[in-house]
Image 1 (cartoon, rainbow, N blue to C red):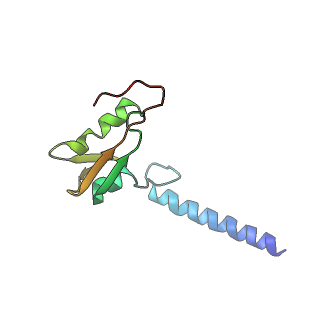
Image 2: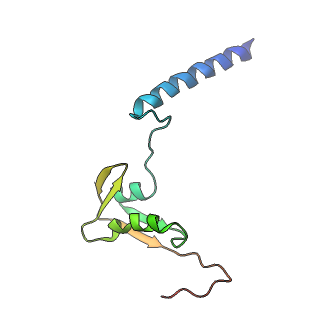
Image 3: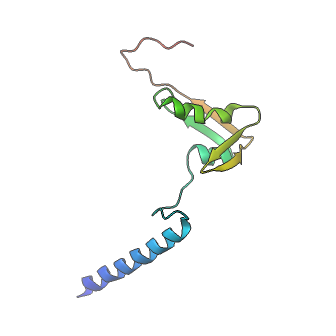
Length: 104
């Protein structure tokens, strides 16, 4: 009997949480956007480490170009962000053991 009460309590809690999450979203998505990675680094500064930078689609690389320009801006979720002056970008490439050497 006690476990049924707990289950009902969790169901009520989940329904209430879901209601609040939907309230955050204007387009009916179940979960709101959560800033992380490049967006947080662009906004607050710090080191942005880009692991295996040569592996993603070229469009991903091009979307990060604005972080390296003189007048640094970054767009995330349609919002234009002035890039923090203390942003430092470090990128490494993935070179498989059977690949030919990368040019410098």
